[in-house]
Image (cartoon, rainbow, N blue to C red; front, top):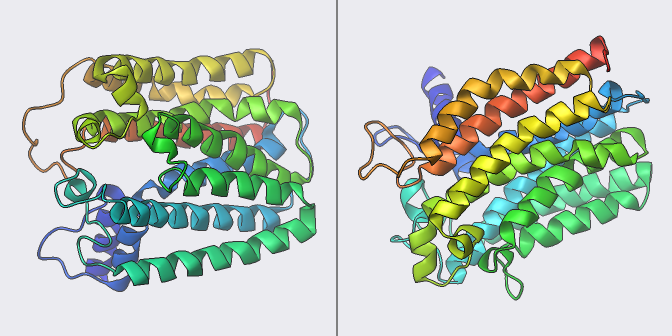
Length: 335
């Protein structure tokens, strides 16, 4: 059991399983669904629920509906990851030579699952999500469907034809919309049955932070994407401008949190996020320097580099944001 738990820990932290370790069924599906990035979805959902009881005017929260919303978001994220891998494979983007097949096991290319098996898994996960959607719609009404359909559209057509948002510099804005206003506002609405305008504003800091992770990944893949004609935002801007943009976005997260506290939208405990400033300084320094020429020792997701640093900042700052909201719910202090 200790070995299995170590497998899960390694997969969840590195999206890899070391050679020589025996693949267990749970680790296999954690790899197929790219579960290592689920913390961002869990954080968005947690923010949406906590804003109900940690905002300037706390309202009644239905925690059962909140839990179902969180489950639905994670399942949707899993389906989205599998959909992206399927369409990128069938579209000829994902190959053994492309970055996706190098930094972590690709579900199809590595033999974890067949194309038909992946399609079946996508259908099964979406089926569970549909059941949750029907239940939540019965409880809260048609806006739940609107949130779900908007998220589904962006998720599917992120790589699927004919839209292919990622190929036209629209993948990054799409991720900001999904992990910010759609997830956070949607969870708030499901939890409370209402949606004041200030919640949309409060969703922006974390939306920006999640977007820095994707921009970092696309900076890492810029040369490979250029070769096959994928015009991500870093491809359009160039590596240096994209790195500078990411630095600005990272700083703006903290600036927006401060503004929301000063305007009384968020409680002062959300300033706990500023405990991540030392990590911000370190990440900004990394983004000011070229990527290492060779793989660092014991580094698991090479050739990715900048995305890992953005994710480390997002994980810490997001966790502190959630902690600050929880503290505000228990002992609210507003300016």
